[in-house]
Each structure stands twice: as structure tokens, then as C-alpha cells.
Image (cartoon, rainbow, N blue to C red; front, side, top):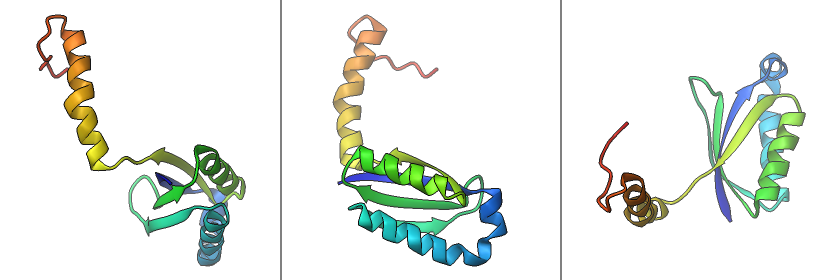
Length: 115
């Protein structure tokens, strides 16, 4: 399963229908499950976005379908971005970035400049 973070903003329609928010949030949760996915955790948040959810989906196609369907309902505008385990990030940082930085610096030494 692939893990995604979805950031959602209420639309004008969503803001007008906050009294029914619980029901359309529950419906979207059931839709995730029907697509073979799972909501790990979701929260209402302050700031630029109104909701954040961490979900698992069986494929990229499924997450794209979910986001497009969710947005088509008119209550929220949403985006999804893949989430990687810390171990994966650490592996990329220790091997991948060092190789890239060596090529960029041109001298075989790690490029320690911070632009």
C-alpha cells in the first residue's frame, strides 16, 4: 500500500454546508475503504488548509481517482502527496545525495554549499 498525505480546503459550498460536514466526511471515509484504501488518521487543522488526512491506497491510479472524485463533489479542493518512511529518506540522503553532490561539485568531494 502507498501512503499519501491529503491536504484539503473547504470550498464556498463546503463552507455553506458545514452543518452536514460530519455526514460527507463519513461518506468520503467509506469511499476510501470501497476503493481498497484506508484512512490512517485525519484532523481538522488551522492555517492554510482545513483538513489533513494520511491514507493508504493500493495504487497511484486509485489515489488520483479518489482526489478527483472528492473534489468533484464540491465541498473541498484537495491535493495528495506521497509520504515516505524515515528509513527511505535516510537511505536516499546517505547514498543518493552524496553521489549527486559529488557530481555537482565537480571535484569528487561533497558539495557543502547551501544556496
